Amino acid sequence: MTTASVATSLQLTSGFQASEFDGIVELFARLDERMRSFREGAVDLLLGVKERDTASQRMVLEARIAGRPTLVATSDLPDLDAALAEVRDDLIRQITDAKNRTEPQNNRNLRSS
Image 1: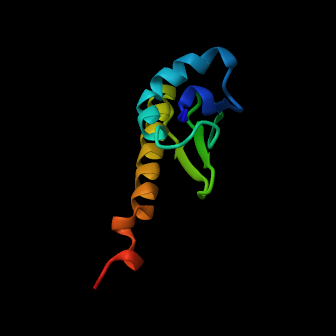
Image 2: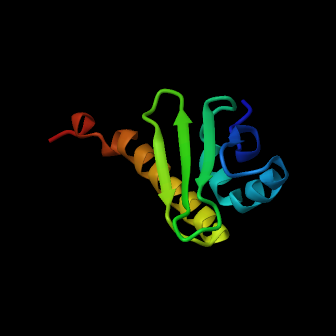
């Protein structure tokens, strides 16, 4: 089974240029580790930024994972690299939390009393 990766799942939307793709994939390498548990094609990552390079910059990283609710990580940090790191780390946390909630050892219905 081929697994999902940032390189195959990431789509840059508003505020980014195609030439920035490889650098973002490299910065998001830690997210790749979390995505290995999903099959290739099961994850779509959408990254966009509004009012780039201004004090009111807002970045959004959305993860659409087949069979799961959409996860959204945001950052209002004005520094682009810091904002990218913040949305990456927040999405890693959200994926971890979602996976932990659905694993049998964390499901109350499966626990014996």
